[in-house]
Length: 117
Image (cartoon, rainbow, N blue to C red; front, side, top):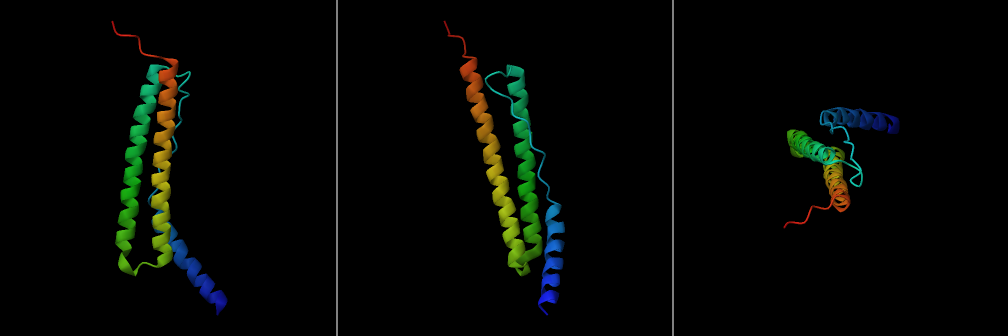
């Protein structure tokens, strides 16, 4: 009986894993070294970060749609998985933004603006 229960739970989890896999995160983006990057490289990185954040917002919407689609009858394991994926995505977005801001500060330190007359 225990083996049957384990097999049943594995089948359910794999089914939900397949549904959750439809919501795929974007590929990681390279971050330039702000201390050595050119202005054009930093502007390109800024555009990549914005596109990445937009794609991650689409991921968050997808996860919410998947969870809402299952409704209240969704198993707690599925709900927990979707909440974990949401929280991980938000943490990753914050990490990418912080990394870009760190490199932007390094760029500004290495390339101070000329003094205004």
